[in-house]
Image (cartoon, rainbow, N blue to C red):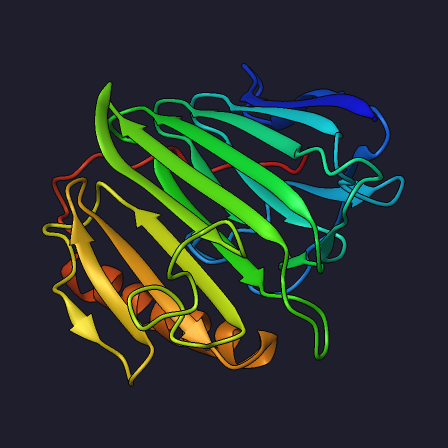
Length: 276
């Protein structure tokens, strides 16, 4: 069994620079400053922001492992957080559950764009992920989750994912997904419909005059409005590429909605002026 903790925080200094104030790693949770890696939605094209990648310093999580990650995006700062590669959930020698707990705070006028790579549920894995995000009233958020159900020609193990988001102290979203042999009906039409990939996208932006309207984007993708204003995208795919295409298309749609429906009187975060 391996236990590891990591912490990351950013702030907007008095000199106007966005800084990575805390960058503490413990293998296998290795945090590293990085350069741009693909599109960065909701950063308005500004390259003056903090970018950090999470890299795996060892295999896992393996059954029995306990990981904890803490992220604090300070007032007025912008953070783009990504993964270096996909995460492979592996079984342990005694069938114990592995756990990853992530706690995030996004402060006043701050922006977090969190785009991790897919999580792959290997056969016989037993894993739980808990993510808790606390947003200030004028914080912005883009967060993506992608889960691949087994490797090639492999049935997945057991995975539970819970995502909780609170905004200005009030619940915004609390959803839980359970797949694998211990989850009754997980591969039925109410959950995965036999698809091999499942994912979601949450966007919170107080600059929207109203939350985006509900919409079906093809057979396997839905956009659902939330208070905030905010939106939840739920998608299924036959594989990782199909899922990513669906989520990217939904994000493009929300970006267009944001440009067309911005409330000019809504609070906006200060523009970052320097890279960390």
